Amino acid sequence: MEKKQDERSFSKSTLFVIIITVFLAVFVFQQRIRVGIGGNNSFQRFFPEPSKSNTSGEMSFITDKGRYKTGKPFTIQIIGNSIGRAIVGYDMILEFDSSSLEIAQIASAHEDFQIFTYKNPGQEIITGTKYPSSSTKTFFEGEILTLTVIPQKKGILTLSLVSERGKEKTQWVDGDTNIIYPRVGYITLDIY
Image (tube, rainbow, N blue to C red; front, side, top):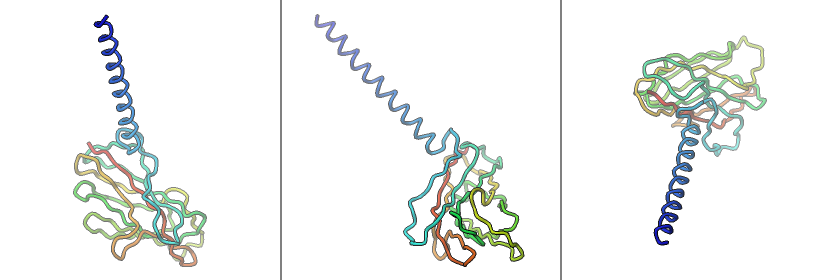
């Protein structure tokens, strides 16, 4: 009788351990997918809203997958939504580990914008200005820029748009020269 009770107790504790293990495995898998490790990395992640009163729209990243090979170039799109405001210029601050990632090329998704860049250690500051000869209104609802990047080291890398650093700010400029601060995002990349 005592042996049967021990077997039941052992079976219950074994079942409990198995359930906890399965729960933890599912949780870890979901977390890896959420941060873009080993899964599709084409969803957006945002930092908390900026505290400025003239906040509107958003800027973030999108790419086709989450794992990339060291030394092999790939593209990342910077996407945005200007929430119905016609934009004539923008500034972006990208932050990343410059020893782990090289930004080889930056191309505008809009032919009526010219791009200027300035590199700081761990930063790339990008300014887009509309050509004065352009008469079309530009409303951003998707791709703004395409980055061609080359991973330099293995590991998990975060590429972030940041709201401000020193005197630099990530911002939109509309047709009335109003400055608008978008919500900004980041992307996590798994480099192997």
